[in-house]
Image 1 (cartoon, rainbow, N blue to C red):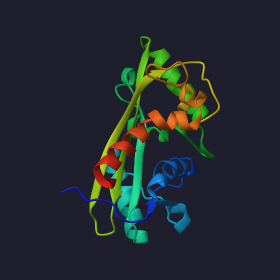
Image 2 (cartoon, rainbow, N blue to C red):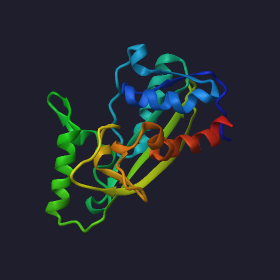
Image 3 (spheres, rainbow, N blue to C red):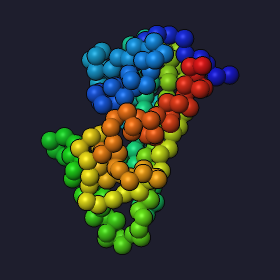
Length: 203
């Protein structure tokens, strides 16, 4: 049986300020206060699974056990049809450098790979988000959201984060990085996953 969320405080199992802001905005209307794993000084656990759900579970259970509060983890990434679903769960890894993450470099590398393969246009891709809500007793619930679109070049826009400047959601002329945050949040993969999780656990 699906467990309902009845608490008023939720740990976002991430050190990403962008994610915390997004979840806070999405959950504030329900009177839920979001705090970040960083607020508790938690380290980030190793993500050793090869699926979004597996890695989401690692992060959510780690934060719930460490804080004694329910925790919400999001494992998300970009899947590209012409690259057989890559980068997928390794989306952030493609941006890793010795001095931190560089998504400008990651986007250039991604486009270069598509050019190398002579991938046909439109270059279809999907942003995917899997949310895992875990309780300190070990129970969890999950939901998924997908936002289909295409990759474009050159990049456009200065909003958003990650691969947003090269991702144009289906049916829209702007990239995620050209959209106002509220407009992006209304249709993003994460918003769709949150909507599914809200319907499942919060209503």
